[in-house]
Every structure is written in C-alpha cells, then in structure tokens.
Image 1 (cartoon, rainbow, N blue to C red):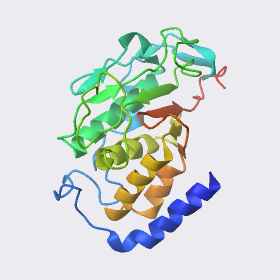
Image 2 (spheres, rainbow, N blue to C red; image 1 turned 135 degrees about the vertical axis):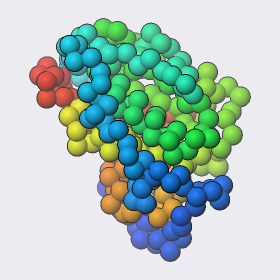
Image 3 (tube, helix red, strand yellow; image 1 turned 90 degrees about the vertical axis):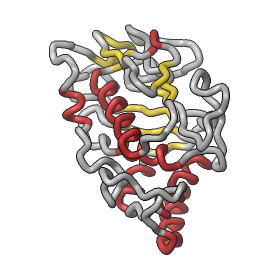
Image 4 (tube, one colour; image 1 turned 60 degrees about the horizontal axis):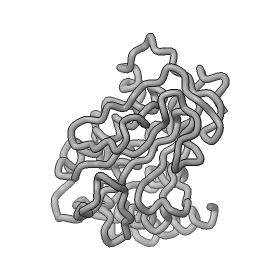
Length: 247
C-alpha cells in the first residue's frame, strides 16, 4: 500500500501543470462547489445529517464486520435517482445511513446530470451472515455502484465491471471525497475498497481539475485495492463511541 501511495503522490507532483477548472465534458464545475475538493460549498455535513435520524433509536453495531450483528438498526430507504437492489439488505447504524445519504446528495448537487446510482447491500435487519459476503454483518459495510460515461444495459439492476475508459471519474471523485470528509467524525468512514486501475483513473481526473494534494491524500489514504471491486465500491465505517461492543 505504501508503494501505491508514493506512486500517487509522485503522479500528483508531475501532473500539476495539467490542472484546469473544467470537467471532462468542457462544462465548468457547478458554482455551488468549492475550488478545493470539488464538494458542495454548503453541504449539510455528515454530522448534521446523522442528527436528523430518530434520536430515540438505540441502534448498535455489535462485533466485527465479518462476525457481528445489529441492534435496532436504521434503514436506507433509497430515493429519487437511486436504485436499491435488495431492500431487505439495507439496514445499518443510523450514522452509516446518514453518511451515505449525504454523499449521494453531494454527487447530484455537483453533477446534476449523473445517472441513477445502484445501491447494493448494507446488512440484514439483525446483522449476521448474508450470502455473497464475508462481511456486511454489523451495519458498517455498504456496497455502492459506479458511475459510467454511458450506463451499461444491465445497470443499475446489476453491478457491471468498469474500465478506466468507461468510468465517469467526476461523479466518482465527488462520491469518494464526500465519504472521506467523514473520516474524522464519530462512526465516519474507515476505508474504501476499489480496484486500483479505477482508483488511479479517478486520481488522475482530480489532479487535472486542480484538486489540492491535501484533499487527494485525504481521499486516497482511505483507499484499498481488493480484487473483484471493479464493478462497485465497498465502504466500511468505523465503530462509534457508543458502540462499546463493536470491534
């Protein structure tokens, strides 16, 4: 992982001369975004979003992502321009739900023409093992589809493999940067799994748009290359202070 980060930093230093203010399509970035990380300047913020969840809920993440369970969870309900693939697997801690909801809002605020996003599995209602996953057991794991320059026919009903040529890096950067913004919050993002080639494509796009090295490092220090993550991203959130049995 160290060698990957070193390579990314070197790439950033070599490519700063390419920085510019426009998107791939030639359109200027939405006026509501900052010039620093490409996120909405007046985002609600993950902490504020989390506070909108019912406070009486005593949701708890118990155990580890690969050996755990959920107590009194929140549920991700989806919404406009979202396709929830398996609604019975959209249970998580309320902060996890709120952070994902805010990240999606940020994407469509910055990229209003981005296509529908496929929402994959969170956890089952009481946590525990579910098919097709070794983790997703304690309400802190989420699978999200990718953004493409042209949505594949099978998408969003199914996750579809992307390549650096078919991936739309602008919405992907906003999604990743919004998630990374929660890293220092209680229960914020811990790591993000994505194929290395796709991550590099997003990185190169961000460098060319003048994203600062500080914001690049904030996002890419969280990234992990895991095989079979070229058709979705896997986001894992940290244990919260109140989740005393979480690990």
